[in-house]
Length: 191
Image (cartoon, rainbow, N blue to C red; front, side, top):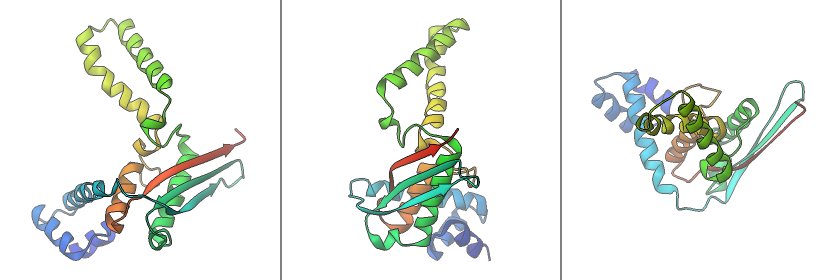
């Protein structure tokens, strides 16, 4: 029964679920974490492949004031046609509507914007009379929050409030055995 529950929650195969349950001592939550970690590790091997197929996920707010389109790409049209892939594209589009990210990844943020934020953070710490060694330790955490606010893949998906967008992509990538990535998004609003 627990194998079935684990399969429904993760989409992993029977053997993988059995192994994860044995390693976690029968704890389903720990088994989910183990499977996610393994999925993320497995998905890392697909990064050098070309993702030339895909689908466009879209979201329009109920009053028509916000519209989003997301290009989610993969390697084959077979994967692009799956319900799970289309659902992820749709979930990401809804997420973009709700959170207004500035870029897909950290690398896409303008260097000047990141440097400016880093300078402002240091200035804030200096105003609080923090010693340089504490500033050095606190700065990475402050910048991490900045990236979580502005980078799509670093944000927690609004549809489940647990998984980061990048991790959801990696999990589906591992499950499908293909590279999956957000190529771009467009968010329009009358706000």
